[in-house]
Amino acid sequence: MPSLTRPLTGPHLTFRLNDQLQELRRDEAYRRSGRTGRTLAKHGPLRITLTVLGEGVEVGTHHAEAPMTLQVLEGRLRYRVDEGRFEIGEGEVLYFGPGHARDIKALEDTALLLTIAGKDEA
Image: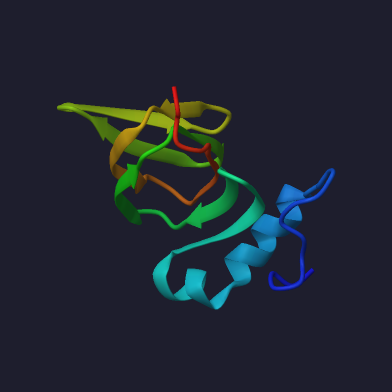
């Protein structure tokens, strides 16, 4: 379904991630820059975005005021927390509290789900 006509919210949404990933990898933005994504669901403060990154692509620093997770579906990522460098790979989930996710880089072709929750009001 084209991205402009597909629903982003509803009583339930189902996604065939392999089909979505194939579409993203054919996207002109991905071929040009090695990076693209698609918001799968959006409701209030919740966002779920499927993202593909080519090997060596740097996301840099992501500023978030809310908690987020990166779930690696394929590939590997490197990231930094304070002065430490860490890696996560396929099947792993990284949680970041509000603040910064620093120096995120794809070490190989990578697909991930980014989930951002609303700003914590507590």
